[in-house]
Length: 184
Image 1: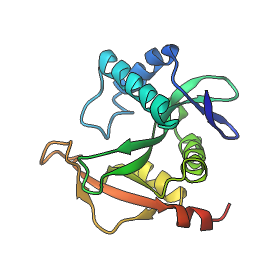
Image 2: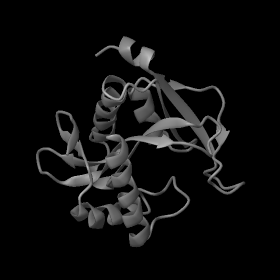
Image 3: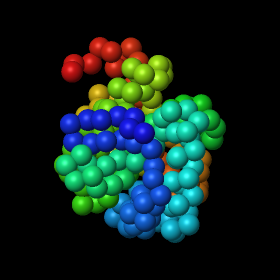
C-alpha cells in the first residue's frame, strides 16, 4: 500500500524485506548519533513491526521510504501518534531516519513535505510537532525547510536519562492553518 508519492520517493507500508536494511541503518553510529544508543537487529525488527501495526490501525505512521528511481529502501519518513510521556502530548510527531548514503540529497525534506500534506490534507490532523536534540542541526534544518515554527523553550526529553547530553530538545510545530497558508 502506497500512502504518499513525491517526485523521487514512495512512502509505503513496511515489508519483511525492509527489516535487514533497516537494522543496518539502526546499527550505524552516524545515523544514531542523536539517539542514546544504536539498536540491535531484534530491536530494529520490533520497531518495524510496531510501525507496520500503527499504519494498519490508522492508515498512517512512520512509513518505509524508498527511492522511485531505484526502488531502494532508504529508511522511514512519516507521522506518528505519541499518546504520552512528552510534556506536550498527546501529539502527532513528524519524523525521518535515513541511511547515511542518502543524506544531503533533500530526501528527508521532500518526504516530510509529502507526509505533512497527507497529515493535513487526508488525515485532517490539526497540528504536527517535530523534535530533536539541540545539537542536531541537520534535523533542525529540515524542520525549518518544512516551514515549521520553532518554539521558544527547549524541553528535557523524558525518555532520555537525566544529565545525558542528548536530553535537551528543541521543539517545532506546524498547525493545519499555517500549512494551508504556506507558499507552494
